[in-house]
Image 1 (tube, rainbow, N blue to C red):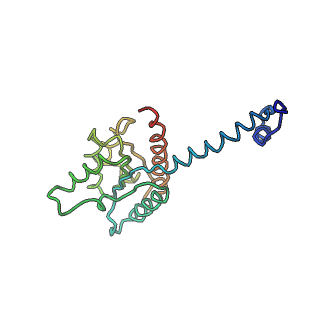
Image 2: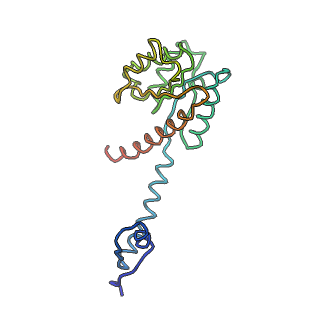
Image 3: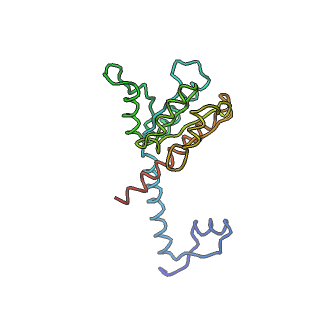
Length: 201
């Protein structure tokens, strides 16, 4: 009886997908029944790997239309299990160091830095970090398509490569869903790479 061919749920599913009918032996079906839960266990482990995400953008009390976007982004990332924080949450005004130095120190420790500049000045600040080889590869910058003139935006575009920062455009301040979608997608990619690279070291 051990060599009998049986039609398991996986074979039925394969047939529904249009694959050729290929029944399993009883032993093969039992083996597959043991493998599948282990796969789900691994995927559940990956789901629990947190990505450290640093969020730059308009201040929490700013009246910028992008402030709610930044607030919601932190919430969504945390709901997905990521360690998402605003730079101002971990800055220490009592320290004798400048804000810029503190932000650089922070940026070096995070997996992903998301920047949502809302003024020309803030775009200039991002430009400085985008040129820094210690952090530029982790930088995801969202630029308003309505404000792409000027040195800083054009310079960011010029240095945006797979080896440097990523620059993503959104239509305007009231159509910014791409910010959340792209950030969550990037965080998921980093989460998966953390698991994949574990086996290489």
